[in-house]
Length: 115
Image (cartoon, rainbow, N blue to C red):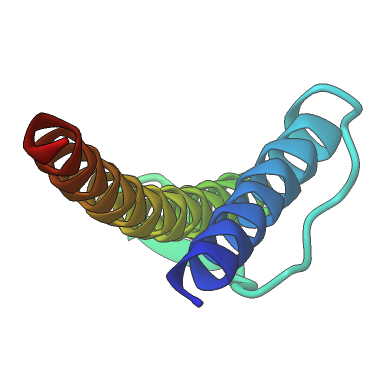
């Protein structure tokens, strides 16, 4: 049972890792647009020379790219943790099977000595 669950966790972890890597590749290499979560309004600053309008569209896109990168890194980390837990389950299962195999071999050796 632990083997199935361990392999399932590894597969889900790998899927999350590939999802985040493909998502970041599409955005940063192929220049696909990210979902606009933050939309900053233009800011008007009053200076000694009069009011100055500062456009925030470029800053808004940088903030959205940063939020996307943080979210994808979070998904990547979660996937790696899930795969690590699955790997740990498989390791424990293999150790358990090795101990059982070794105890069976010792019982067989004792039986052969009695003959």
